[in-house]
Length: 224
Length: 224
Image (cartoon, rainbow over all chains, first blue to last red):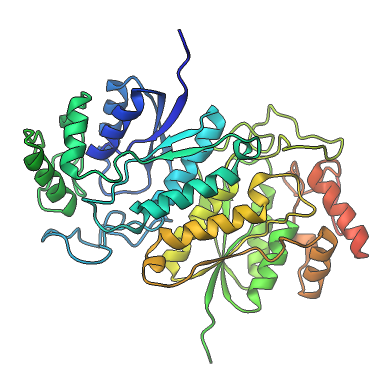
């Protein structure tokens, strides 16, 4: 039996990263990483653990200092999560430098595990206007990462895979469904309760619900 | 009185970052950040605190997950720190993706503090062969960082300042001396003891001692 290459998959426990894990699992032995960074929604970490198990991926929750990525509605309980629909501009749910911190850790984990492949579920179509979800950002991170580590010096090419980047939410849901993702395990809501039940009103809930409808897939989300 | 712009300074407590803090303090109100990442040498964090005070900078120690940047002689006590002098290639004291993780956090802190200026004491001349100390790496990080955050979207230009990048260790020591750095506060040794006393044998001690000699500045290091 041929040994499959290893990949590091950023797994938040949401719909997008669950689909990315399913995509990566076709070709790679996956090591999933999640982050505890003082986020409002910690039920997503339980979801991530269950998703990793479902795809036989090893899983590691990385503890970040919760005093760093502050000033966002997702990390500061005094800032309300918007419930009236998407607006222009960068919303208050944007978390400062979050994907850069996540990918930087993934880069260290990849180096320690001898992997040259990192997967992230960013999406530039049905997304919330975050700067660190844009294709140019991912390309720039990849270029930087190729210079940053031992692998780059030794001529190996690290790749940042963002397979969802040009998909609509409906396409992501269709792809995940085909690949056997149990979306009932996933938590997307920015303010899910301890049991992972969704508010149905935040931007993430709206994008998710519209996605299931457009994909013609029954929405398994439990709303509170 | 004009308000000076804010800068975020990565302050390890070593000779290089102390000099960078002195340089940045001439133009900026500095917020220094240090990291606790399971490193062998924790006395450097005490040194960082004293240096920040000496330059009237605010200071914050960020706690990282010590299970991430593993496999280095600086983070794993079962790997010995080399004591026989510098060799070709990347040494075992290289810490996976360390500067990327540090700069990623600095980027978040800069965004939260409304700063567009990050200072780091990397040096491409008298250094230990680390990939993430090369000029091309710093340029690539800066390019990525300009795309990563709200500031970039709003047309502000984040800068990663690496003022030591082309200096020799002797030049760094001369510059720091002119700017009033008390080098007796700094700890460079990879395996300093609890009191910050140096081994005199590791690569960092060798570069430091040679630097003081070449600069013609008395070496204030306390060797154990």
